[in-house]
Image (tube, rainbow, N blue to C red; front, side, top):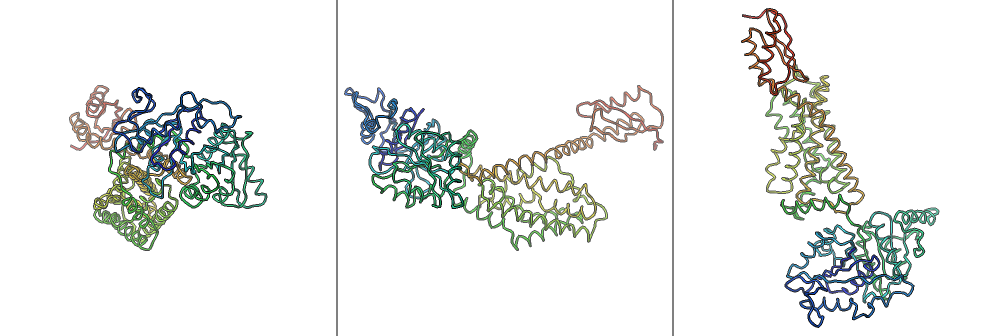
Amino acid sequence: MRVDVVIHRAHRSMALCRWAWRLARAFEAELTILWGLDVTPETRIFPSEDARGDDDTMVGAPAGAMKLYADLMVQSGARHPLLATLPDSAPPLPVPDVKIVCPGGSEAMDAILDRVKDDPPDILVVAPPEGRGRNSVARSLVDVAPCRTILLRSAAGDAQECGGVLVATAGGPSARAALRLGEKLAMVEGVEMEPLYVQTPMENGEAVGRATLSKILDTAGVADKAHVRPRVIVGSSLPDAIEEAAEAHDLVLLGASHVGVVRSLLFGTVPEKLLSQGGGVTVGVVREGWSSGERLRARLGRWLDLRIPQLDREQRVDLYRRLESGSAWSFDFMLLMALSTSIAALGLLQNSAAVVIGAMLVAPLMTPILGVGLALLQGNTQLLSSATRALFSGYLLALALSALCGAVAPPATLTGELLARGGPTLLDMGVALLSGVAAAYCLGRPGLLAALPGVAIAAALVPPIATTGIALATGEMSLARGASLLFGTNVVAIVLGAAMSLFAVGVRAGTQLKPAQRRARLLIGSLLLLLAAFAVPLTAAFKEARRGNLTDTIVQKLHAEARDAGVEFVSITCADRPCRVTIASDRPLDAEATGAIARSFQDHIPGRPPIRLTTEIAILAP
């Protein structure tokens, strides 16, 4: 097992290393100090044979690293200086091996980031970012490290004592990790761990809080420990409760799932109060290691980062604003929806492809569909609600208007444009999926916005709704079902295609998912299952259409073969095996003649399937 601590600034680096040393001792692990300050031109790992001189001194190490290493290492058989602070009752554990890795060159922190990604430790300790900057070393490490990570804001001094551990908890993977870590550290240090749970005011709040905390401790596997002293505070906010309970402790831990509290503890006024109390209190935020799925997602993200141009922050903000405004149900949206539906319905009724294409360009439905894709990717509940409302409201409006058009001016016969929307196949699903990818990619890059009208034409959205309404008004239920299937397939495929495209260009949720993001992942999974369900009838329709297309290409040859044999070709069906072929003849045919005709037909059908020949007796035209 290995504990790594990253030194990327000199401030309180010794205190950070001492806490990392305590963790390494508690877990009987090796401690590696990743030194990112005043580095030398080449990488050094201490201790190592080539890094020692004749007098056993370090060669080529930065001065700061040499001092820190000397403070931590055992001197000529003497006890480690940190052991002097441990109580006599502490169980004997081996002193951790300590080494310092100093990546050389001006890009030392880049080398440390690569090391953490490629060879992650079991536990990573790093000082939190200073201020609220997003591009800090600490934030980069937390983003890429797949292991359990601790952001540790150490108190002043060298952390010579550990008088108690306070763990604020409210459930969740990271909170459970903080409980396990705090319990192990308290046991080795011979001190108490105080799990803290804040219960909102209610009748019997104390009893309810203790029952909840007991369940949390049991789930984390730290219940019924002699050195664990659970505590429930009723009524206070969590930061205030931590400030109240931290006085008797030297270390405060909490899970990274407390997003608001983490921000307050690391950057707000609470840490200043904690750090100013007596000898000061160290605050640590624990983020649990990634699951296998999260690791895979992170690897995929890094692979995409290297191969696909990523949207910068300004472009992502602009994309979100554009989708947020275009996904809201408004008068403009309603007006465009009504106009595009009316144009599409009239074009379908008069069988005009040009008019139908014009309706596709006016329709505003693509924007809320892309908004759904972005909302699912980010777990943005507000955007998802707004975009879904606009999508369903627009659908109902379009359906009502097209049904009205069909009732007022019913077609004498079903036009070709209507029939074209009633028989979707697997190819339509492919078109919609690729259209979603293209639309999301173009929308995120202002220079490609001119391509959006073409995408809108490729992914027809309003014409299938208009076809459904007209078919319902005229009683053509089969056509209505086919057009509805086409619209549903288009919507689901575009949402998934947009989510894929946005993920590829850098629009991603954090690796540690919030509850809303987990629900969004479930919705994405549900859409994938729904798309798979749509694929069943679409595949059958595709096969049937393919068989029809094949028959169209060979029917002339079959007619010619039939004429040469003195008969007339009537029909062929290859939905099952054998293929059923019907011919007409003005005379009975013996077995030899029918066999010769069947073989001549078989030569022109792909795959040479078996043929069952049916003969009808008829008077043939001369």
